[in-house]
Image 1 (cartoon, helix red, strand yellow):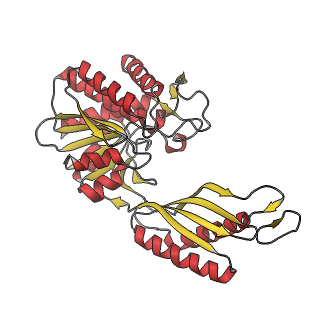
Image 2: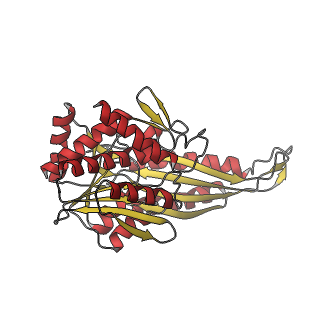
Image 3: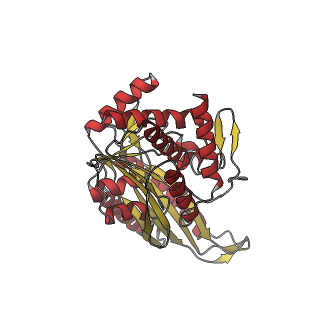
Length: 367
């Protein structure tokens, strides 16, 4: 086990040290390609338009299972020294450690075990680009006809077996006020109006779209960006916010979209405030039923000696597109905790990375 732990730290540290924000994954693509070539595989490079390269290893003949992990990360943001990995108390810290170079490390460790044991399960390992931005890596898989019965995506789920993904809607909300002197006490402050309207929408959507059924979930909101105003001495006349909402798979994107438009029009009319709404991105969620999830739970139970928790992922992943556009049943299952993803303290447990590789190896042998 100590040898596997050291190997996991070595691979993960190297992956973290290679910067790969969305749109700049080329160096990491080549590194993974070369590494897999050196351990005896014949990987394939798939060029993805204006982004980089997917790296694929295809084994067996029936294409039963795909294991798909993304190479890109969010930028440095407020993380200090993010590309110089630090190992502390059995955890590795650095940008992408959790989301999802830990999962990529588990994939590589699994491939090393497959090479050593000279086995060839029916599986496609796909290392894809651009998950954090536009999903062009997953789209390229579909364009090229990569199709399997099921896909395992090792995003950070704390090793929970997730049989579904939330849906999401991302949009801009532009609220208008009236310029004036900062000392005038004007009530037409566009930034303050934006906050008020955001709070009204959050309360109404939470009340309307909370689902208390299988895999219960309330909508999750994030006001991720605000732009507006001139300075302290001027009342801001326009403010724009970028908002993301995740919602239960039983709710469709179109239903949320229609509700938002209706409520925004009503708020605008009642408050006599001009409001503009601009969709940016959205997707439907899903819950899948597949025997492969039961097999994965059995293997998890056997290898880790504990009962797996089944749930849905509260965020969007490449699974949303693969499920809806390619008809592939997807299970999201991997090392790491989502609370550390995209954060200034991004880190992952090395034990979980090794555990994931052990479970994945046994799962592939079982199918």
